[in-house]
Image (cartoon, rainbow, N blue to C red; front, top):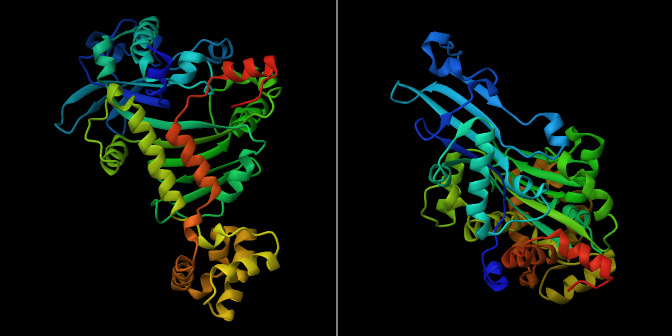
Length: 402
């Protein structure tokens, strides 16, 4: 495949969970699981009693020593349960971070042409873990969890913190039907959360530093294999990475988002492993987030005087009282963000905010847009994969970035 062809087949999925139905896999070594899967199949060994939820699970995960040694394996769960037909069934769930599985880190990003190699390697690794699966069954396995993501490289001396500070000013919980917003690591990570999906932005280098102190402090998990990258990455200047992730944690959520982006496909491994789907999902959520950005924040704010002059020039027919009201709102929104502003003004009810928001949308020159969203959208549209070796070569050769 030519470099030009690869450029057209770029995609990025991080964590994924595949579910295989009974009959599409064979357990070769029951005792590699805890508890042993023997009790799920062998009557002479004594069947396990199903728990209060009418199921029992047997797990096989990479050990700490394997993770520290760079041995990359998926997390396996074999579950025996009663299905909707009131019959016993045994299923296998395979969960892994594909970039870490292939590269040992989640900075380097994947291309579509790697899919056959990924399936082949996964099959071989599963065999080592005592499970036999045909490649065709892996490729056609249903996806029950998927994290779409993109590493956005900043080489213009800006930092992820500048982007995060702007994004945190939004309050889009109702639009995205989320029920919680989390801020972590001194403002270097935040997420919109619902029961079965999350939209997350974070500073990837800062997150890796947090993982070096404690895995619990980091947004990303299982960082052992990539901690050694820190000493190299910190030498590359300028080089910052803002990461965006959309985490869909249930098959129903995956189906819903496929419908929203007008993709009529079953959520199988080979279908989800697609540039167009990855790009469309990330762009869809970015657009939803941007729609919650208060239009008044589009006007640059350095001083009240500069803002007021620019605002009056752009809106010559506006009343002085309205202009002063917008100035006051701009100062508060810049300091507090929407979420805190609405909390402060909640005594006036939600209607007051919607009225103010409607006034803002009627202002002139809103079409200028927000630079951070323009930058993020441009990077998602290009979908150029991050390859650390490119930046390391530039550092060694003392070259400037394109």
